[in-house]
Length: 120
Image (cartoon, rainbow, N blue to C red; front, side, top):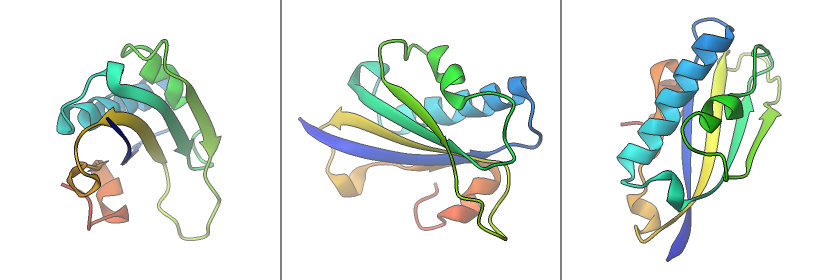
């Protein structure tokens, strides 16, 4: 079984805890679904947020999806002038047999503009 990294990102319309949790759950569930895996295949998840998101940790939302035993970490993105605001990014490390070029990366809402080459 190979270890693969799945990338994903979403944007928020506003910095509110409930909204952050909804969008984070939507993204994480989409990443699992698009790759045909469950939380049992997940090794670890690294979340980042742009500096304008301070209402909560995206990892707190993932915990509600059954990630209790999965190591999760949050960090702040670099404050690059002109960068897309209100973005939550994810890098999920998983065990899967899928070849690297068959991994489905998930970009939702305005985050589609970040990686048009990978977005569905």
